[in-house]
Image (cartoon, rainbow over all chains, first blue to last red; front, side, top):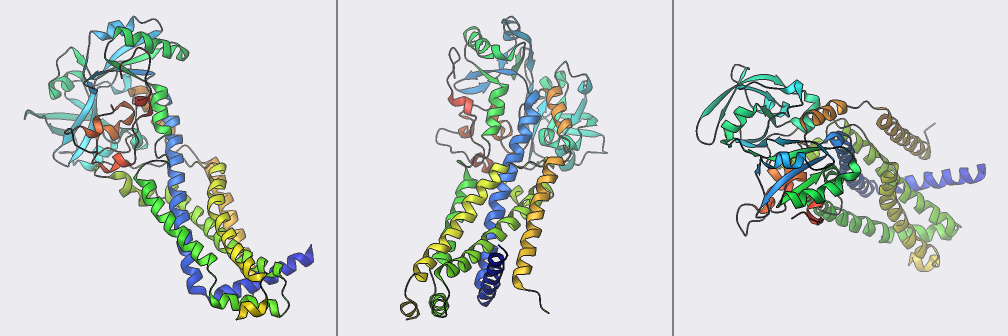
Length: 381
Length: 102
């Protein structure tokens, strides 16, 4: 055991000296390798943390919302359907919801304007009052810090007193939120009294939801029901590695890296061949040559993997994934300042290690084995 | 007496290994970073989506969007918002349900 360990130590020493002779090439390879792991792990950590966040945070989202679809598009729903839905067996409570979007020409931001539900005592508002989300505070200089001036699309200026600000802790769900009283909302968007954006349902027993959806489909023609599990499923598929621009960009980078790494690992230079020939000629066994090259591949790939993983974790959970911000932000003016709860899945880390460390280490071994089993004289020539 | 390269390498690997273990410890022992406050607000206001992509209505509320919202401007319009490339359409849009017009 001790002899074997000592032998491997000497092989490592020799390998490191050999790598230092080609330090420029090995340093570039290590840096690129580390960068690829860093990007992959950053996306993996961020996606996983967001999915976990959505699963936890949206667990109290409405059990079902009923939308009206006209020509395949979401349209306003008539208030007459509220009592109809209230009378569906299994529905505990049905309430019309008012929410929509406002484009602020002052700063080019989109706000989500919403009327707090009647059951939410904490956020009830009088006409002329608003509660604003942390993203609006950051992007809109409030006049005298107390009033928000909004211009309706028909030209009227609304002067709204800022009653409160939502906590910055809630930015991930409320950054662009603007809470308004119902009379102000209807006046601001010129909505008649008999329409809502959609209707939110509270359901007695979650297992009855499929049956209730079937009943709603019959009683409210042209409707579409979005359930809480639909919402959660939407967020479980967000940033799926099988779709989107991110994968296209990453895919190209990964393929380029694979070609680069394989070329480096599999294509033996003349100098390396000569080195193997000399080692064989002075009495090294094939297994020693293989062990030396195994250490070379393993040290580069394992070192890059561990360092890339640590850097990615710091990037996502200590620096709010700042490098991904521009990709995620797009053309948005409001971007939430959020701190995700750290979340790591062992299986994901193992999978990432398996698909990055193992192929590279294997790619270094095979060509070396070919050269190592050849006659030293032939190799040196 | 100079330090052997293998000693340096083994130390560096052990240090990185310890750092990775520390990450796991940090991840599993960290506080909720305001998670409870966010969950409470969602319950109070009946929110349905994360405010992660605020540039377009179908990326701000992907779970509430209809299939056509990304191509809303005219019949030949393609989705032109950058985050539309990152967010997939809601899966439930593709699942026909008995008795409900999709």
